[in-house]
Image (cartoon, rainbow over all chains, first blue to last red; front, side):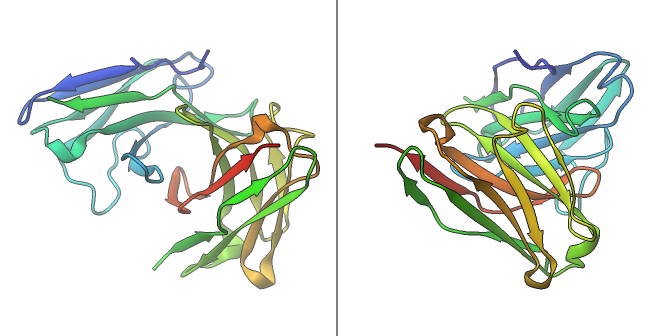
Length: 110
Length: 116
């Protein structure tokens, strides 16, 4: 089982707003910042959100992140077909000496 | 432009050794942690360990401690992931990535297939 819990799948229609949740605990999300990654089919992951709610340059403002307590969320507004991908939340884990990832959410654009 | 370029796909037999590489360019290679991430077929992402090129300080995730060796050659601006004796279960895609508060830059991945 993954330390960070994500729904395995999510879906939406073009133009819709979709949110993906990431649930953790006081030892990870509750005390660390959260990053989100997008992995398009057959490609390497890409950093989408860092430090809970910051977007790297080049990431559209349709993507937004938030964190509250031991949970975090990724919201995608104005859903587009090219947003169909796997999305992973992650936070640094001192016991792993590495970031720990959620299990990933496969987003389908209907 | 920051780039991480990984070595090509490998096909190996169980028990063989392997060393794959990740060459960084476009930034001060010594001053950013590099991590290695495993993705087994159809599965999620797992961080294996990280290394700081300036002093070669290395940390391994407990699941991978003793199974792999992470190293770096500053003069070549390259990081390496090494196995001394591969198992079929090591078949996966392996990514290197630069850590700067998140894995902001990724290599293209190296597919390792271990099969008799």
